[in-house]
Length: 400
Image (cartoon, rainbow, N blue to C red):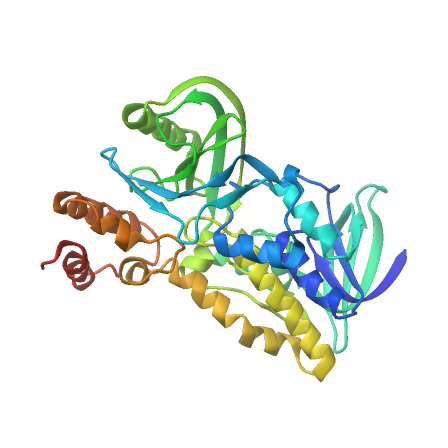
């Protein structure tokens, strides 16, 4: 049985893990990153990185290599699709943003972090102690050989169904709603601009439905609560795109899916860790309303790394520092799910108010009605009250 000692141990070779490692390695602390798979590894993700996330990527890791981008490389903005077929395009405020190929983009930042990477290591258990954390892992490439790590701090960056979170909070997984997110790739014709990410505002098509072009295929994605008949729901989405946007499928290329923890950002129910374990990225619950988790993964990961560096240099409590410093990212994420912020402020990087106010009054009335119906389907949004509706009408329609 191996026994390895390090300053910082990061579970998950992810964007969040790399951002954390960049901070701790740059500060001179030994950092090991565990990854269950062989790098570079596939990651289910649309790859539409927000302008804020792209700026962070460039500033901290340099411009990614050419293989870290899909085609089309640039996405102009988000285009809302309404049940009638009406469209509301909203360009990203700083300009087009890149379409990231996670397999190679993640590998780029992980290598650039200069952390020591241990591949084929599957996290199994941990024990928190007064001055360190004991982590047990198994080497999946060596018949499950057990390896024990002793770290002063551990960062959990292992995604939405975090095994570290499950160990720290045994009942947490059953306390939040889970969603099945799936997407199918088609060779198809579709009457939608390939330079945009298309998102449906349609309460009859599940919680999150989208389409975008990628490497010569069209992706049609659909989300529903865990346990619901996903194929039936996805078929409704295909029918919608056939009727309103000219979808003609020639061939199904592939499909993939996973479980998603939308509920944590929606209900402001994050987990940031305890007892020398810091939880970051989607493991902590960070996910923007457009299901873009990359930008908040990068920023929250960096905050986790900075908190550990500060604890080492000032002999402080990294968990307490992180709990304080992460609140800005928490607020930013929660605001993106808040109907009041969406309608009265500008929490996203595309200007909804400017786009909708360009439309005729009849279109505005229809869009507002559909947006309220769409937001009302989410758990935790039952408070969309007559007062809010009246305020929305005044903002967008100029009257009560």
